[in-house]
Picture 1 (tube, one colour):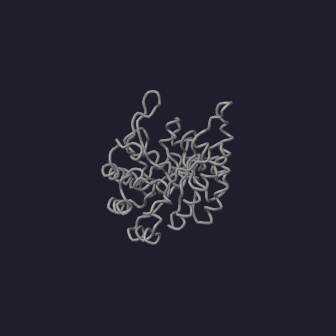
Picture 2: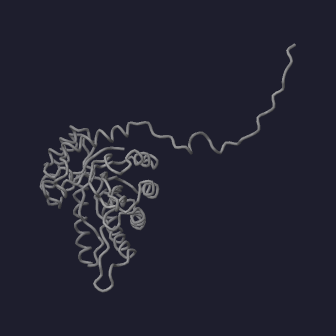
Picture 3: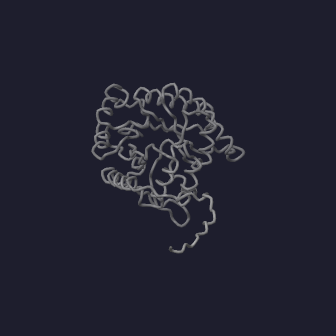
Length: 305
């Protein structure tokens, strides 16, 4: 497993500082979720004005550009909104392909409310999202990019993510899994990781504390909240996950959170210690529990001659 961070945690850093800090702190890769206030990355000059220079910046530093994260979602009842979001994603895919970036992230989002009949059926919204992913998958594959659907909003559970990736029916669609988001609906990694398995291509890590009613009381760096980080790492090892554990520190949306200069090194140290630990041998694999059990052969006493 490799360690990286999303620029959502350092919204005031420009691209050279993002790359230089990743190198200094020992991160293998970065996810771009906005730069200097610009969330529509194809319009961000730091990335798109000189593609060769951007690629060289990452290549020379040894830091991987892992993911371009969009705000796109496909849950809308309005077909024009769905098409507009698909058009945005195509622009992200084109930019990612030109930069040699393997992933573009999109959201699951929410269940729309109908005017007369309350909320739409969950199944209908899931199929609409899956249909958009199926439409985009060939375009992503053409540009050697994988679309990552992240659990969010009304679709934070692993059942929804399993369905969407499966229904997309393409190796160009995988899941970006956020375990803390799933915990807001009482789903633990012990359920979600085995269920999703190799459908997970990237993991977003954040942590926090829940109050007595199950609401989020505080956002905290991974390892300092209610997320059982050692168990999560064990489970990911169990599915042979070899992708990125990406720090998703939401400083962009919560300016009162601690600065990246403080949180990023803590995250790097915590996860490095966990990843360097010897893997836990699960009970089921201690010896061959199915080995045949035969009676011990009788021993014959011998008399000294």
